[in-house]
Length: 150
Image (cartoon, rainbow, N blue to C red; front, top):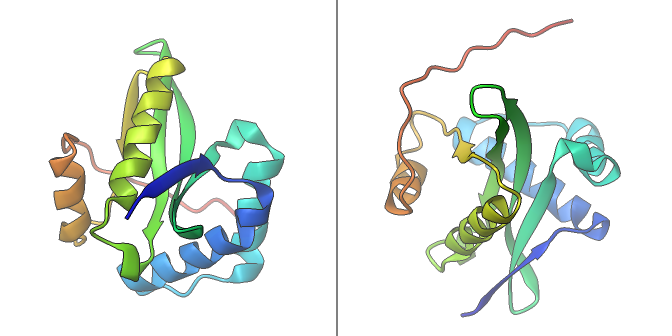
């Protein structure tokens, strides 16, 4: 099957939001609220400084998507691109959807002179880790911390 990659458009927002609900449930057992995720996805389309989405299609159906966000690095004097919100529908896994999405991100990052492309993954998601490593990504020696600010 041929995978076609394109930049997502606002009419893809509902599909992408649905993917995020499914991904959170599948990978972390979390039930996200569409009332929060839907507007958050829309925000990316309304405000390009937030990032962008790519979708992968097979036979005209959106099979998967990812989001790229940016972080400025004063150590590198360049943007770091973060791949986030990766989801491929179960029936399309193992057919090169993520690989095609990833390769498109790398190509675009080169054109836009991003210094690095990174992503984070749940520590228990060994399947995804193997995929990322098979594409040449390397595990970094960092821990991630956060705090909720009310």
